[in-house]
Length: 154
Image (cartoon, rainbow, N blue to C red; front, side, top):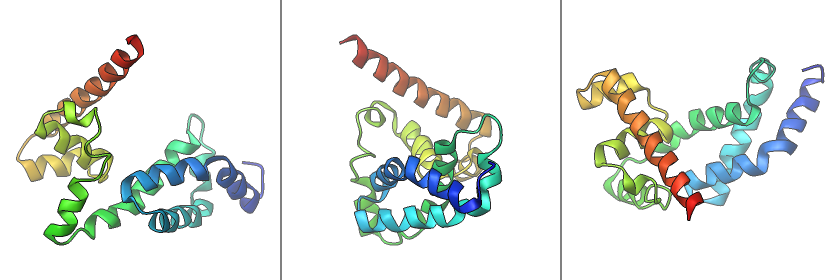
């Protein structure tokens, strides 16, 4: 990026902040908390500008990764059963694609996609191989892709 750091950050903010806020809001289901996470992500952007300038890097995908890293703390804060029940009832957990998955597929998909866990850590937790976890994640994406394709047909 040939721009100054502040101009580059401002450009990223203007281009992606609304979309990223929506993404974060879907996870935390609370606008003030989502705005705090958005702010935290953009506070780190100046230190990550080199990542944004790499060839083939999607700026929004990089921002999503940064948000997921921040949101790990949100998931770790679900300390008691009430918090965990509230988490399980969030609308995005019960979306039409996830409901098509088996409970094991749901666990793998949500652990990787929303909780930013690695395939290796999930494999250890569930006493499975990393290959089994990766295969299950591929199955999840097939379910989502097929569900979207079916919606386009009708």
